[in-house]
Every structure is written in structure tokens, then in C-alpha cells.
Length: 249
Image 1 (cartoon, helix red, strand yellow):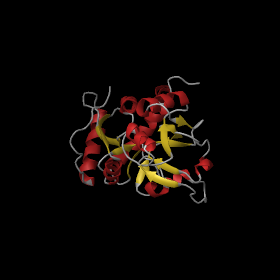
Image 2: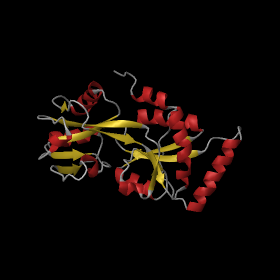
Image 3: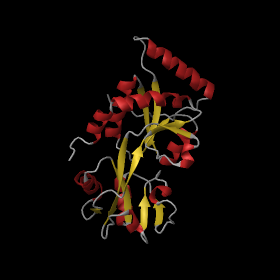
Image 4: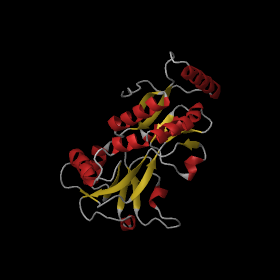
């Protein structure tokens, strides 16, 4: 079961309408003949829709839920989730976001790798003095050790992986940081070669790891589903790992 993309924009719900929808969904789940509640969820464009679709299908089957899925630019993703219009998949948890958003347990840990044409660093500290492009949604504080000043230039670049790699090759930055769902350099190198052509090199391993989660506005009706989704994540942990890393080392 792969969720279909949602074509029209998501309607804005009032809190009362949302709570009514939640109550209706919970009531429906109690009756076997009723359909499962359908939840709106958005992810950033550039996300691997196939794998994330399979991940959501797995969680939905375990939790008794179905999904309306939309892939949107990152700025719209933030707007939708902050205004209580949907859940989001893939927003990093930061102290600033945690003030208004509720987050699920981690779905998995994604590695952040450096891509470049030469002199690719192998440690976060090696970014010093370099011009670094990051994807939308990556919070710069993620790249800083506690209390350490930033010693490199950051620029956010949008688009899918192929578009971001073209910007790298055109000299907009010296390095591009790319997220990958497991620790296999060969898989990521294949992704990079297919999207950007030959001549691009990876760091030997991820510079750091980030937890990937679901989230929703704390005052939205969708936040009430997070405990249920946490239970599904816990129950399907082994299957999630097999889905995201089908050929472990």
C-alpha cells in the first residue's frame, strides 16, 4: 500500500473541527466495519517518496491509520505543520521547534554526509573555512558543537538532489551536505552518481547522525495521534530497520 500524493492544498482546520475529526476517527477505529482514520501528512520535496511511502504504509497498517500525503517545498512544510494542518515527516527536532511542535519517537537515524569534488572532509571540524551548502530544514545549530562558534559559511539550497549537486558543481559552494538513511557509502555514492554524474566524492562516513521523526503542532488534533504512532514505531522497529537498511553490513 503506497499512499497517493495529495493534489489540492490542505484545508486549514479550526481546533474544534480537528477535535471532532479525531473523535470521529477514534470512534471509527472501534468498529471493525468502519474505515481507518485518514491523516494528512507532508514531507519536503526531495524526500525519497518510495521508501517513505513504504514506511508510512507499515506504520499505518500497525496503527490502523491511512494517510493523505503531500510533498511540498520546505517553507510550506513548516507553515502547514505549525498551523496545525497536518503532521510532518522529517523535520529535525530543535529546542526552538520543540516549543510549539510535538515529536514522535525516532523512526530511524539518518547520517549527514559531505559531498564534494576534492578535499572532502571526514570530520565535522574539517568544515572550518569552507563554503557549505545544506538542504532546507537543516538547522545550523545541528552542525555546531556545544558552545562552539561557527567557522564555516552556510548556504541553504533547495531542490532535489540532482539540482543541489548541479549547484555544487557550478561552484555555489565547496561542499554539499546530504542525508542518507543508512550507513552504506556505496548506496549513497550510487545515488550521487546517478543524480550528479561522475567526479563527486563522499566523506568516508557520516559527519553526524540525526533522528528522523514525525511531528505535529502541539495544539493540533493530529498531535493526539503521536502516542498511537509511537506504539506502532516500537512494534515495527525491526521491520523498519529492514526496510531502511535491507542489506546490513
